[in-house]
Image 1 (spheres, one colour):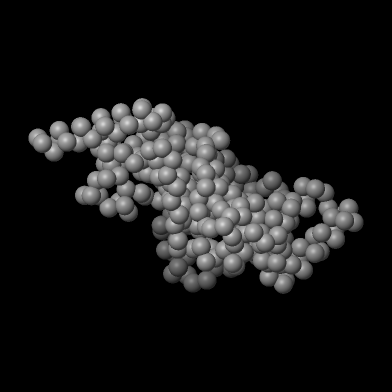
Image 2 (image 1 turned 180 degrees about the horizontal axis):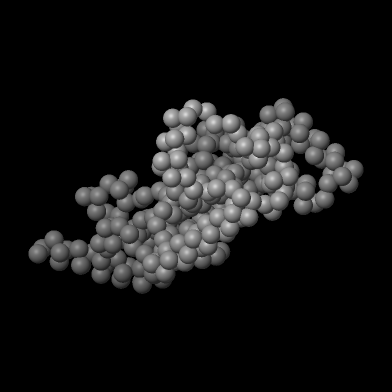
Length: 302
Protein backbone atom coordinates (compact mmCIF):
# COMPACT_ATOMS: atom_id res chain seq x y z
CA UNK A 1 0.00 0.00 0.00
CA UNK A 2 2.85 2.36 0.88
CA UNK A 3 4.51 1.53 -2.47
CA UNK A 4 1.38 2.48 -4.42
CA UNK A 5 1.01 5.69 -2.43
CA UNK A 6 4.64 6.58 -3.11
CA UNK A 7 4.23 6.05 -6.88
CA UNK A 8 1.13 8.27 -6.93
CA UNK A 9 2.98 11.01 -5.10
CA UNK A 10 5.93 10.82 -7.49
CA UNK A 11 3.58 11.01 -10.50
CA UNK A 12 1.84 14.08 -9.09
CA UNK A 13 5.19 15.69 -8.33
CA UNK A 14 6.41 15.05 -11.90
CA UNK A 15 3.30 16.65 -13.37
CA UNK A 16 3.58 19.65 -11.03
CA UNK A 17 7.23 20.26 -11.93
CA UNK A 18 6.38 20.08 -15.64
CA UNK A 19 3.57 22.62 -15.31
CA UNK A 20 5.69 25.00 -13.23
CA UNK A 21 8.63 24.84 -15.66
CA UNK A 22 6.37 25.44 -18.64
CA UNK A 23 7.16 22.09 -20.23
CA UNK A 24 4.74 20.68 -22.78
CA UNK A 25 2.80 17.59 -21.83
CA UNK A 26 2.68 15.14 -24.73
CA UNK A 27 -0.10 12.62 -25.18
CA UNK A 28 1.39 9.24 -26.09
CA UNK A 29 -0.68 6.96 -28.27
CA UNK A 30 -0.49 3.19 -28.43
CA UNK A 31 1.29 2.46 -25.12
CA UNK A 32 2.84 -0.96 -25.66
CA UNK A 33 4.94 -1.50 -22.54
CA UNK A 34 4.64 -1.69 -18.79
CA UNK A 35 6.74 1.39 -18.21
CA UNK A 36 10.30 2.38 -18.92
CA UNK A 37 11.18 2.02 -15.27
CA UNK A 38 9.69 -1.42 -14.82
CA UNK A 39 12.68 -3.56 -13.83
CA UNK A 40 10.71 -6.78 -14.31
CA UNK A 41 10.74 -6.37 -18.08
CA UNK A 42 13.93 -6.36 -20.14
CA UNK A 43 14.55 -3.87 -22.93
CA UNK A 44 14.57 -6.60 -25.59
CA UNK A 45 11.12 -7.79 -24.58
CA UNK A 46 9.67 -4.28 -24.86
CA UNK A 47 10.93 -3.49 -28.35
CA UNK A 48 10.05 -5.98 -31.07
CA UNK A 49 11.57 -5.14 -34.46
CA UNK A 50 9.58 -6.04 -37.58
CA UNK A 51 12.68 -6.59 -39.75
CA UNK A 52 16.46 -6.80 -39.45
CA UNK A 53 18.65 -3.77 -40.16
CA UNK A 54 20.34 -3.49 -43.55
CA UNK A 55 24.10 -4.17 -43.70
CA UNK A 56 26.47 -1.33 -42.83
CA UNK A 57 27.16 0.71 -45.96
CA UNK A 58 28.19 4.14 -47.17
CA UNK A 59 31.43 6.04 -46.44
CA UNK A 60 33.94 3.76 -44.70
CA UNK A 61 34.91 6.41 -42.15
CA UNK A 62 31.32 6.34 -40.84
CA UNK A 63 31.40 2.59 -40.25
CA UNK A 64 33.13 3.21 -36.91
CA UNK A 65 29.76 4.50 -35.64
CA UNK A 66 28.26 1.01 -35.95
CA UNK A 67 27.69 -0.56 -32.55
CA UNK A 68 27.46 2.81 -30.78
CA UNK A 69 24.36 4.64 -29.53
CA UNK A 70 23.70 8.32 -28.85
CA UNK A 71 21.03 9.75 -26.52
CA UNK A 72 19.02 12.94 -26.69
CA UNK A 73 16.50 14.02 -24.04
CA UNK A 74 13.70 16.46 -24.80
CA UNK A 75 11.03 17.18 -22.19
CA UNK A 76 9.80 13.78 -20.97
CA UNK A 77 11.30 11.76 -23.83
CA UNK A 78 14.66 10.17 -24.45
CA UNK A 79 15.64 9.37 -28.04
CA UNK A 80 18.34 6.80 -28.76
CA UNK A 81 20.04 6.73 -32.17
CA UNK A 82 22.16 3.69 -32.95
CA UNK A 83 23.72 4.25 -36.40
CA UNK A 84 23.17 1.38 -38.84
CA UNK A 85 20.76 -0.21 -36.35
CA UNK A 86 17.69 1.74 -35.18
CA UNK A 87 16.12 4.79 -33.53
CA UNK A 88 14.01 4.39 -30.38
CA UNK A 89 11.92 6.68 -28.19
CA UNK A 90 11.40 6.25 -24.45
CA UNK A 91 9.03 8.17 -22.22
CA UNK A 92 10.81 9.18 -19.03
CA UNK A 93 7.88 8.62 -16.72
CA UNK A 94 6.79 6.52 -13.75
CA UNK A 95 3.49 5.72 -15.47
CA UNK A 96 2.82 1.99 -15.50
CA UNK A 97 2.38 2.10 -19.31
CA UNK A 98 5.11 4.61 -20.21
CA UNK A 99 5.75 4.48 -23.95
CA UNK A 100 8.88 2.85 -25.33
CA UNK A 101 8.99 2.14 -29.04
CA UNK A 102 10.96 1.90 -32.28
CA UNK A 103 10.88 4.94 -34.57
CA UNK A 104 12.73 3.21 -37.39
CA UNK A 105 15.20 0.50 -38.36
CA UNK A 106 18.24 1.17 -40.55
CA UNK A 107 17.26 0.70 -44.20
CA UNK A 108 19.11 2.82 -46.74
CA UNK A 109 20.77 6.10 -47.64
CA UNK A 110 19.14 9.11 -49.21
CA UNK A 111 21.26 10.19 -52.17
CA UNK A 112 21.07 13.42 -54.14
CA UNK A 113 23.60 14.92 -56.58
CA UNK A 114 26.38 12.45 -55.75
CA UNK A 115 25.96 13.16 -52.02
CA UNK A 116 24.68 11.15 -49.05
CA UNK A 117 22.03 13.53 -47.68
CA UNK A 118 20.53 11.35 -44.94
CA UNK A 119 20.03 7.93 -43.37
CA UNK A 120 16.55 6.41 -43.56
CA UNK A 121 15.35 4.33 -40.62
CA UNK A 122 12.03 2.69 -41.59
CA UNK A 123 9.57 -0.03 -40.52
CA UNK A 124 9.26 1.22 -36.96
CA UNK A 125 6.28 0.60 -34.65
CA UNK A 126 2.79 0.79 -36.13
CA UNK A 127 1.19 4.22 -36.33
CA UNK A 128 -2.38 3.90 -37.55
CA UNK A 129 -2.24 2.26 -40.98
CA UNK A 130 1.50 2.86 -41.50
CA UNK A 131 4.81 2.39 -39.69
CA UNK A 132 6.92 5.04 -38.02
CA UNK A 133 10.05 6.15 -39.89
CA UNK A 134 12.92 8.53 -39.27
CA UNK A 135 15.34 10.46 -41.44
CA UNK A 136 18.71 11.20 -39.83
CA UNK A 137 20.59 14.25 -41.13
CA UNK A 138 24.39 14.22 -40.75
CA UNK A 139 25.98 17.62 -40.09
CA UNK A 140 29.45 18.79 -39.08
CA UNK A 141 30.07 19.14 -35.36
CA UNK A 142 32.87 19.13 -32.80
CA UNK A 143 31.68 15.84 -31.31
CA UNK A 144 29.35 13.00 -32.28
CA UNK A 145 25.94 13.61 -30.71
CA UNK A 146 22.23 13.98 -31.41
CA UNK A 147 21.44 17.70 -31.47
CA UNK A 148 17.72 17.87 -32.32
CA UNK A 149 14.58 15.82 -32.90
CA UNK A 150 11.38 16.89 -34.63
CA UNK A 151 8.26 15.37 -36.19
CA UNK A 152 7.59 17.29 -39.45
CA UNK A 153 4.84 14.82 -40.40
CA UNK A 154 2.72 12.52 -38.29
CA UNK A 155 4.87 9.49 -37.37
CA UNK A 156 7.71 10.71 -39.63
CA UNK A 157 10.61 11.95 -37.52
CA UNK A 158 13.70 14.00 -38.30
CA UNK A 159 16.92 13.68 -36.28
CA UNK A 160 20.01 15.85 -36.62
CA UNK A 161 23.26 14.06 -35.80
CA UNK A 162 26.42 16.11 -35.42
CA UNK A 163 29.81 14.48 -36.00
CA UNK A 164 33.32 15.60 -37.02
CA UNK A 165 33.36 12.62 -39.39
CA UNK A 166 31.42 14.63 -42.02
CA UNK A 167 33.23 17.95 -41.75
CA UNK A 168 35.46 17.37 -44.78
CA UNK A 169 33.92 18.64 -48.02
CA UNK A 170 34.28 15.20 -49.65
CA UNK A 171 33.20 13.12 -46.64
CA UNK A 172 29.68 12.44 -47.97
CA UNK A 173 30.40 11.95 -51.68
CA UNK A 174 28.93 8.79 -53.20
CA UNK A 175 31.26 8.16 -56.15
CA UNK A 176 34.41 7.36 -54.09
CA UNK A 177 32.45 4.73 -52.12
CA UNK A 178 31.65 2.67 -55.23
CA UNK A 179 33.76 -0.18 -56.50
CA UNK A 180 35.80 0.38 -59.66
CA UNK A 181 33.36 -1.52 -61.94
CA UNK A 182 30.42 0.49 -60.58
CA UNK A 183 32.34 3.74 -61.01
CA UNK A 184 32.93 2.80 -64.65
CA UNK A 185 29.25 1.98 -65.06
CA UNK A 186 28.31 5.36 -63.60
CA UNK A 187 30.70 7.07 -66.01
CA UNK A 188 28.94 5.36 -68.92
CA UNK A 189 25.53 6.41 -67.60
CA UNK A 190 26.68 10.02 -67.28
CA UNK A 191 28.10 9.95 -70.82
CA UNK A 192 24.85 8.58 -72.21
CA UNK A 193 22.91 11.29 -70.41
CA UNK A 194 25.28 13.96 -71.74
CA UNK A 195 24.71 12.70 -75.30
CA UNK A 196 20.92 12.76 -74.77
CA UNK A 197 20.71 9.00 -75.17
CA UNK A 198 18.80 8.77 -71.88
CA UNK A 199 15.72 10.54 -70.64
CA UNK A 200 15.72 12.01 -67.14
CA UNK A 201 13.51 9.14 -66.00
CA UNK A 202 15.78 6.53 -67.57
CA UNK A 203 18.84 8.20 -66.09
CA UNK A 204 17.38 8.18 -62.57
CA UNK A 205 16.26 4.56 -62.95
CA UNK A 206 19.75 3.39 -63.93
CA UNK A 207 21.35 5.31 -61.07
CA UNK A 208 18.87 3.81 -58.61
CA UNK A 209 19.71 0.31 -59.82
CA UNK A 210 23.42 1.10 -59.55
CA UNK A 211 23.03 2.29 -55.95
CA UNK A 212 21.00 -0.82 -55.14
CA UNK A 213 23.79 -2.95 -56.59
CA UNK A 214 26.25 -1.10 -54.35
CA UNK A 215 24.09 -1.84 -51.28
CA UNK A 216 23.37 1.83 -50.62
CA UNK A 217 19.65 1.54 -51.38
CA UNK A 218 17.32 -1.28 -50.38
CA UNK A 219 16.10 -3.33 -53.31
CA UNK A 220 12.36 -3.27 -53.99
CA UNK A 221 12.32 -7.11 -54.00
CA UNK A 222 13.66 -7.14 -50.43
CA UNK A 223 10.91 -4.81 -49.24
CA UNK A 224 8.18 -6.87 -50.92
CA UNK A 225 9.56 -10.11 -49.47
CA UNK A 226 9.58 -8.62 -45.97
CA UNK A 227 6.06 -7.29 -46.39
CA UNK A 228 4.85 -10.75 -47.40
CA UNK A 229 6.50 -12.39 -44.38
CA UNK A 230 5.20 -9.79 -41.94
CA UNK A 231 1.66 -9.80 -43.37
CA UNK A 232 0.69 -13.43 -42.91
CA UNK A 233 -2.73 -12.55 -41.53
CA UNK A 234 -5.61 -10.60 -43.05
CA UNK A 235 -6.69 -7.40 -41.33
CA UNK A 236 -10.32 -8.55 -41.25
CA UNK A 237 -12.63 -11.41 -42.17
CA UNK A 238 -14.15 -9.32 -44.96
CA UNK A 239 -10.70 -8.65 -46.46
CA UNK A 240 -9.92 -12.35 -46.26
CA UNK A 241 -13.14 -13.14 -48.11
CA UNK A 242 -12.36 -10.59 -50.84
CA UNK A 243 -8.85 -11.96 -51.32
CA UNK A 244 -10.23 -15.50 -51.58
CA UNK A 245 -12.77 -14.44 -54.21
CA UNK A 246 -10.04 -12.71 -56.22
CA UNK A 247 -7.88 -15.83 -56.13
CA UNK A 248 -10.82 -18.00 -57.21
CA UNK A 249 -11.56 -15.66 -60.13
CA UNK A 250 -7.90 -15.77 -61.20
CA UNK A 251 -7.88 -19.58 -61.05
CA UNK A 252 -11.01 -19.76 -63.22
CA UNK A 253 -9.46 -17.36 -65.72
CA UNK A 254 -6.32 -19.49 -66.00
CA UNK A 255 -8.37 -22.68 -66.37
CA UNK A 256 -10.39 -21.10 -69.18
CA UNK A 257 -7.17 -20.04 -70.89
CA UNK A 258 -5.75 -23.55 -70.70
CA UNK A 259 -9.00 -25.05 -72.01
CA UNK A 260 -8.93 -22.75 -75.04
CA UNK A 261 -5.53 -24.18 -75.97
CA UNK A 262 -6.57 -27.79 -75.28
CA UNK A 263 -4.16 -28.11 -72.36
CA UNK A 264 -5.10 -30.46 -69.57
CA UNK A 265 -4.84 -28.83 -66.16
CA UNK A 266 -5.90 -31.82 -64.06
CA UNK A 267 -4.51 -35.31 -63.73
CA UNK A 268 -5.94 -38.04 -61.53
CA UNK A 269 -3.80 -39.98 -59.12
CA UNK A 270 -4.29 -43.08 -61.30
CA UNK A 271 -3.01 -41.28 -64.41
CA UNK A 272 0.09 -40.07 -62.60
CA UNK A 273 0.77 -43.57 -61.25
CA UNK A 274 0.45 -45.09 -64.75
CA UNK A 275 2.83 -42.50 -66.15
CA UNK A 276 5.41 -43.42 -63.51
CA UNK A 277 5.00 -47.15 -64.24
CA UNK A 278 5.40 -46.69 -67.98
CA UNK A 279 8.65 -44.78 -67.61
CA UNK A 280 9.57 -41.58 -69.44
CA UNK A 281 6.82 -40.10 -71.60
CA UNK A 282 7.60 -38.60 -74.99
CA UNK A 283 6.97 -34.85 -74.93
CA UNK A 284 4.06 -33.54 -76.96
CA UNK A 285 4.70 -31.20 -79.91
CA UNK A 286 3.57 -28.30 -77.71
CA UNK A 287 6.03 -29.25 -74.98
CA UNK A 288 8.83 -29.62 -77.55
CA UNK A 289 8.01 -26.16 -78.85
CA UNK A 290 8.19 -24.69 -75.34
CA UNK A 291 11.48 -26.48 -74.60
CA UNK A 292 13.04 -25.07 -77.77
CA UNK A 293 12.27 -21.59 -76.50
CA UNK A 294 9.59 -20.75 -79.09
CA UNK A 295 7.52 -17.80 -77.94
CA UNK A 296 4.53 -18.15 -80.21
CA UNK A 297 2.51 -20.00 -77.59
CA UNK A 298 3.28 -17.43 -74.94
CA UNK A 299 2.26 -14.65 -77.30
CA UNK A 300 -1.06 -16.41 -77.91
CA UNK A 301 -1.76 -16.55 -74.19
CA UNK A 302 -1.41 -12.79 -73.95
